Image (cartoon, helix red, strand yellow):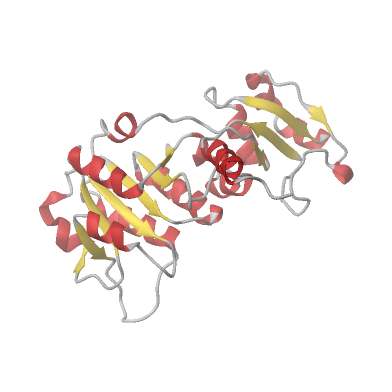
Length: 260
C-alpha cells in the first residue's frame, strides 16, 4: 500500500532535520567522534584489535564498547565498508545558525554547495575547508549530502571540527550572507573574470564561494543571486576540475597573500 503524501513529506522532513542516527566507521572517523564532546554517542561496536587501537579515545568518551567478531561484524553498515573493526552510532552534529558560524573570523570565508550530493566530494571539501580556515561549509537540507559514514571517513576527522550547515534555501542563504557583508562569488568555468581579478584588493573582505554540482553547475537562481561569477585560472583551454579540488583552489585563491 502506497503511503499518503503527507506521511512521506513528514518522514522526509524528519530525516532532513537530522532526527535519524548516523553510523560512522573507520578508526580515524570513530576516534575523532569519540573525542568530540559535542557529539552524542549512542553505540560503539569494535573488534578486539580496534578496541586496543582506540583504547584512549574510548576511555575519554566513557562509552562502553560492544566487542564483535571481525568475521561477523555486528554494526548495521554496508559489509563493503572499510570499517577497520570500528563503528559508532551517533546523532548528527548541531552547529547552530548562520551568523554564529560565519561571523567573527579574522578573514571570514564560507563555502556554499549547490546540489553537491556526493558524500566523498563533500567530505573532501570539509577537509580542505578546515585546513584553509573556512568558517563553514553550507549545503541545503534537500539535494545535498547529509552526514554519513562515507562522508565522515573522507573528511578524515574534519566533520567533527568543521561546521557543516544545511539550510532550507540556498538563494535565501546567499542573500543573508550578503546582508552580513559577504561578497558572494559563484564558480563558473565560462565566467569572464577570474577569482583574483574580481577580488584584487578585496581579499580582506568576508567572502563566500558557491560551487555547483559537476555537470549541471550552478542553478540559474543561484547564478542570479551571487555578486559575481568567477572562474579558476587554467593553464589550458580544456578539462575541468573535480568539485572538491575546485573548492580547495578557489578558497586558497581568495585568501590574502600574507595568509596564503
